[in-house]
Structures are given as C-alpha cells and as structure tokens.
Image: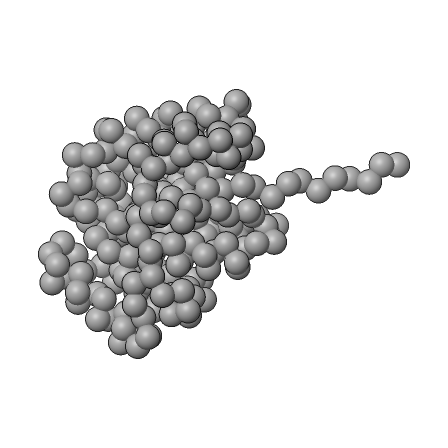
Length: 218
C-alpha cells in the first residue's frame, strides 16, 4: 500500500508597509515554519509593490500558481480612505494569478499604527487614534511594557509577539464590538473589509492571519 503523501505547506507572501510589520512577519515566519512557508520582500511596499512583483519579477511570476495566500500588513490611515477602489482593483487582479482556486488575499489592517496591534497583546481597549499625538501616546504605552521597543526591532517585537494568544482574543473582541457601530459582518469579506478600511474606527484584523496559521497545526 503506498504511503500517504503529506500536503505541501501553504505558501504565503506578505507585503509589509514598514519595518515594524516586517519584524512581526519574521516572528510569524519563524514561529509557524513547521506549518507554512512565509516569504516577504526585503523592500517595504503594499499593493503596487505586490502587483509589480508578480508582473515583473520572474521568481514571483513562476511561483504564482503555487501561491496560496497574499497578505497585506499595514496601517489604516484616515487620509487614505479614498484609495480603497484602486487597491481593490489590484486585489482582484492578484486573486486571479492562480488557476482555480484563486489566491486568498488577507488584509492585516490596524488603525493608524502597528503599536495599537502590539498593545492588544497586553490589554483590550479601543482608543481614538487619528492624530500624531495619538500615535505617540500608543507608542509610549508599548515602550512602557517593553522598554527596548523601537520600530523595526526584531528582538523587542518578538518579545511582544510571544503573547499573541492574548492579542487574538482582544482583537476579536474589539472587532465584535463594531457590530454595534455598523460593521456589516464579522466574516472576512470584501464588503466587511471596505467598511473597516473607511470607517475611522479603532480595530485590528491581524489576529485573523494568526488564527489561520494556528488552524494549520490541525
């Protein structure tokens, strides 16, 4: 009787807005290496970067058919609400790079600054975060927990990220609360993501990517 073959690990490409997102992605890459292959370019960049990579970079083009998911890890800024339609056009194009089933696109969105997502590793809260002063306040809160934290520092980011089970729980609870504020549904759909991208509420969906990685253990 032939031995059963083990299913290949999912291949995930992550496009990061900045070095802090890259540091967190590196933690996920290392932590879940037994269950998924996570890759990300050294250069930061989001939707246009992904479009150009899969159009112009031979390595990305050749891997398109075996790419399972593409993630965009970024902050949702109030002044970028108008970019949804152009970004969604790129999302639709990327999905179709793989012949049936389409590539899954995940939006790892966090309101205003990644430090809010990091703070969810310690507590559940949803402060208004719009101004530079608001962002600096959240940054100070992170540094009060991990004094060595600086944007892009892998060691400090990994120290925080080890508490990701708490962040998953807290972020999901914050998202659930948005149902009372008009969130159309909890499921990861285009309709929901458009609402979140343009809503000016405080939230993070990074936890959904971690829940997916955790599900691969089964």
